[in-house]
Amino acid sequence: MKFAALLALAGLIAAGGAQASSGTLSPAFCDRTQPLTASQQDKLLRFAAVVREELGQDGGDAALVSRSGLDLSRFQIRYSHTAVASRDGAGVWSARQLYYACDERRPRIFDQGVAGFAMGIDNPALGYVSIVRLPAVAGATLRQAALDTPRVLDLVAADYSANAYAFSVLYQNCNQWVMEMLAVAWGDLAAGDGLRSRAQDWLRLVQYEPEPIAVGSRLLMMAAAFVPFLHLDDHPAEDRDAMLLRVSLPTTVEAFVRERVAGSERIELCHDGRQVVVHRGWTPIAEGCKPGEGDRVVPLD
Image (cartoon, rainbow, N blue to C red; front, side, top):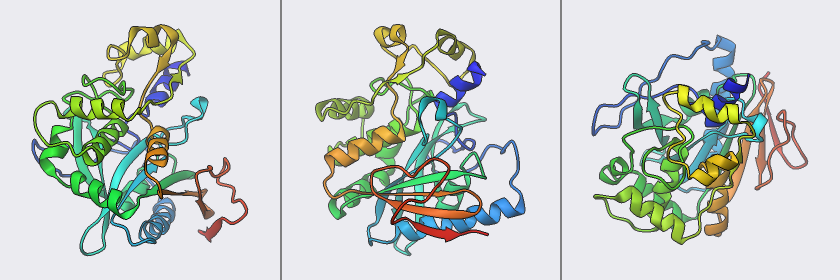
């Protein structure tokens, strides 16, 4: 159980990996361990339709989207994976993100439709998606940077670590790529050598600091030595000694945007197989996908 908990802490690959040839941006997925039933697929597609509807509500062309993955409740973490969502000229939304390419054992970038993003939730019976809408200028700047292939690829590390330290260029995880993408966009950083270092310098300058995750067990720390996509050598010695990992997570991405970008808005959606709950604001939906006052409920039964 403790070993499984470390895997959960890392957020491992959420719904699988992606494969892409060098210099291209094309999706393919690792096999899901348990195939979805027809009923589960139907409900997830209907959930995705509500997510897509909410993405398009304000007329903007870019947002941040996050989804729940493996069960991280042991660490009070609901979300594990963040992507940059953008809308093309035809009004179609897609999520650009970093994933672990299973066959290649390295990080890659790929694009995914909203339905695929929602269906990547690890638990088909209970899932959460968070949307952070951005004001027009901030959103347009992020969209332009996220679609700039040279800058996008310059931000991809050679090696993946699900628990990558937020201020090291040794490794990278999906949420760290998003944070560095925000730095490139809002810091107006050009493509070229050292882009990841320059992005992290900008994040330090604006005082980005992910809240440390308390691992709470030396056995969990030691287990990283036996998993190829978990590493500790990028983390400062004092953090390792204190069993604290400063890792970019969806919550830290959202907190950074909330503090830095006035006018940003958050919408959280969940489904429990019976209904979809749509909740507006920075407070979380209650555990178990229970609607609160003012929440919108869409039946799935």
